[in-house]
Amino acid sequence: MADAARDPQRIEVTEKDLPVHCPPPSAPLWARHPRVFLDVTSHGSMRCPYCGTEFVYKGAAPRGH
Image (cartoon, rainbow, N blue to C red; front, side, top):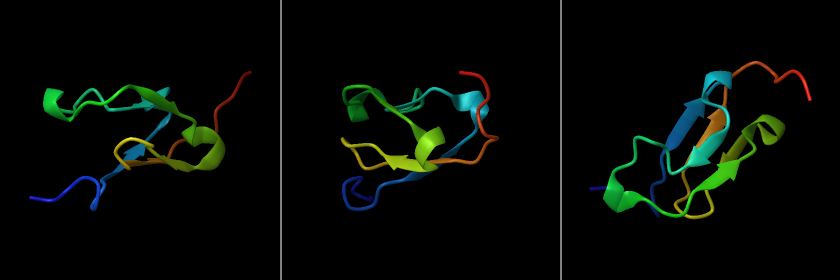
């Protein structure tokens, strides 16, 4: 079994997934940590400061304000 701290997962997200937060809704209850929102649209990708999961934005550039 992989240790999440040593082998974090990578999740690709699109505009349908915004706003992006970790842990994702699919995370099991035992693996949850405080929710943190990640600004993937500005940086292209971000890592969760708690578990190291990398969220990579693969969608269109956001429009509006």
